[in-house]
Length: 245
Ligand code: ATP
Image (cartoon, rainbow, N blue to C red; front, side, top):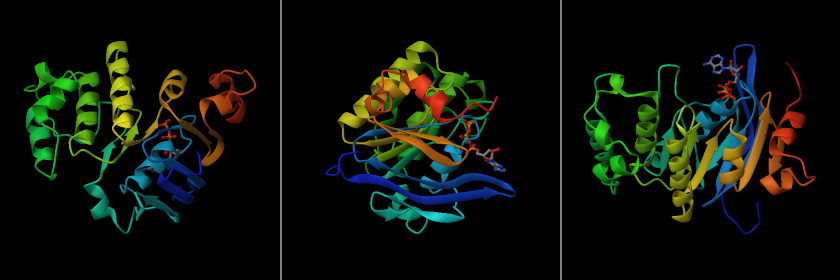
């Protein structure tokens, strides 16, 4: 990250334990404003835990997180209006929506919580959900649930969004369309922090890539910096995360 670009997210010495499991073991990184930062790492590396702490959904055991200049745990209420969160999808689809709720109603409900929300109908249209707007959550396809979850993260016009595997399970059209949307967000000045397992996604979207393994940052930089020696990002990823299989 260039020194003159202000950091919208600063994570310092983060530690999180679940019983005997150390999920996050001293993670530090920052994300520049109006850039896309991609957090990569093997399964169980601590990506979701880190993102949830940054988004104010979990409290860390140690360390600090500053989002848009505010303390993520102390100023969580103030940040709620300025930050959007797309949680990781569960095995049965994206998290956190009632089974009988319909996209149109959920989005209107969320819009009412914000001072200057997007128009729910326009956002449904942008995410190709108009035809599914009246379908109960439990009957939406996995990809439709994912796209609704993204819409819910964006409805309040956030300055910064945390997207946990935003394209997981999406078909190629929806995936490309989501990439374009993320690029539009960046162009509009929104800071995007996302996790992904897809190297092509990180290479296409991310200004900065942070690779974590076993709760620690093992490499960080732009895709060009990380792959400087002519290696593919996949090779770099495999090299820095070790081979434990
Ligand atoms: P993935 O790529 O599979 O989504 P991740 O990098 O997001 O993985 P986390 O979900 O943050 O990893 O998990 C980090 C570690 O913490 C794992 O060992 C996981 O089993 C453990 N863990 C996560 N959540 C909990 C929880 N609520 N209780 C106990 N252990 C947990």
